Length: 372
Image 1 (cartoon, rainbow, N blue to C red):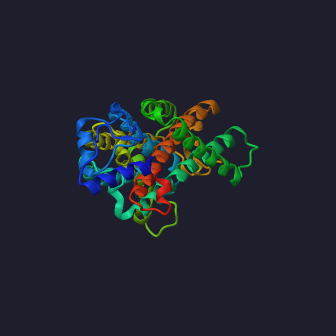
Image 2: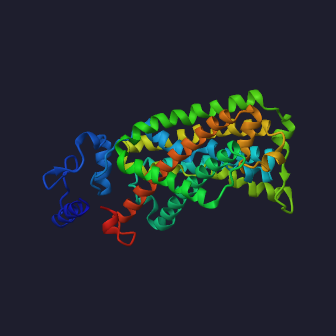
Image 3: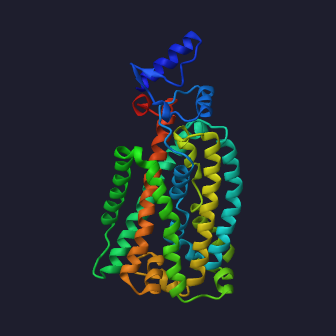
């Protein structure tokens, strides 16, 4: 199909004419059914950009909002990366670090939303740095899969004290998460917008299912300890340095909302929908992130004990200390694992579109094969 599309573009370029963008046919078959070509504004934008619509515009506002918010998984990563934050900055560092991250991200995502309103094609947003971003998104797939897989190992350790974690166990769990994500993208890609509705609900409701029991059952810190106590457990020369290192936890939990832009050719009324999805997604995750940060800062009363947890994840120990129930801990952790795996699904979608789009401009070796 890609070769036939290129032939159409090449032929029309030689003749000095434009293809019929609303019903392009290749070999007698319509590339994209009319109902999947988006609004008249989408068709106009594609014509102005010199692109033929070859992807279905299945995403409207709520699915692409869910796609963005779940992929970033702000509150889930705040729980999962808690060890780093507690070692570098403590509760005070976590609160103020997240505040700094939100303040910085506001300007980034306002600029990104403005650019998205111009409806850049999926590749033009990164033509000068396509290799770097493509490799970065590939790494993000493995990173989130690693987090999800090792949380599973932590749960096994909590429920079976005789279990001895092995590195190859974690590797197999990472591979399993990636295989699930790839399989969903290959075999269930048409249902992905519908799935984003449900996972967005889990992303929002799931947080309250976790923090309400913790706030109700766990002992509490004073406000001064929770919000102002900046610690240096990482052996750095000053608390200021420790705080700056700990910023990585907060910043990593709010990075990546450009994922929606890489789906631009699959979004209906993209010039309006994408900016809204970026800003609403960032705002939603910021609010959910603050709820998580407040909960953690006020309920982590014995940080050394949490860091020494045999599960290697302080949040699992926090769940168990608050509920005194393996089952409750497993259920709350399962919410985080499910959303992380679904985030991997979205990352695979983002990375694959990015590689395809960059290959469309011959940016990679074997581009002719990759863009098919």
